[in-house]
Image (cartoon, rainbow, N blue to C red):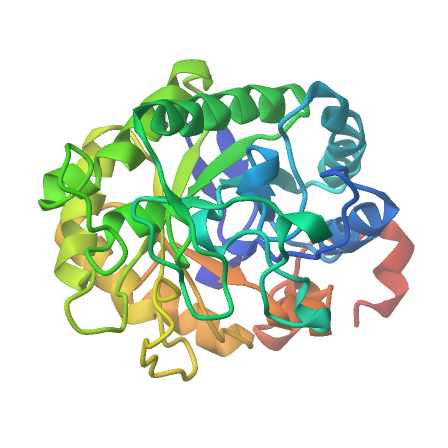
Length: 354
């Protein structure tokens, strides 16, 4: 049996294989509500054989969204459609998960196919927040530095969103602390210039993430897995480093985080990313090697042999696939054929198996 198709049990959840749908923003929600686009989009991955489907970065408050068209989970009314989607995902033998996020200074921007500029409040945007009043780039809004009350609101918003996620039937929750969004902005000295208890030293810069973690864990049943998407590098001088990632991962592991979802970049516009096949996997491998934590990796992983080699070489425990799923929602079915592994197909599709 190929390792890619071996099961993995994490707390009370068993994944039927190691293939995860990485969160991918669709910019297709209205007032944070999921709709039939999300049902078909996510449902196709479940039919296609993915073990875990992580729904896109979901705003824990209206101001936490990247754009006005992002998914949200800041009010109870948003639960119903997500629950319908999750019921279908489970019917196909997949596990539904959600990535809870706050965009911070990268919020209030246009949807990508319309541009990358800020959306001003008079045009439907909003005042953004960050650890420090430093914009991400010249075409992004200038954020307000969060005060003590604002920080407590962020923690409360993540906690309340986690409660709603459980009511919607999600089996896995991921806290988004990478890609230059709010929690990553606190982690990185390039975006965090504070001089209070949330800035300066490594211990201070990770404080908000740990407090958000405490809030989410206070409502999360013990049998539900918790992931943290964390940065492996800022790809910029003076920023977050792979050694920082290992140090944070050890702390998160000691605090009962189940999987370190290691990605990179996004916190500054002058980053220099060496993009290539599986370019982020070395960061996950370092975390796994130095802490013994379960890790997932993502980033230009496009075929079965590549994914299998990452697992066999013990560089990661889970393979997160994004763009390849957009090209082929049935990627796991194809991967099984490529690796000559027999897996169960939906009975409706069995005649296409061989």
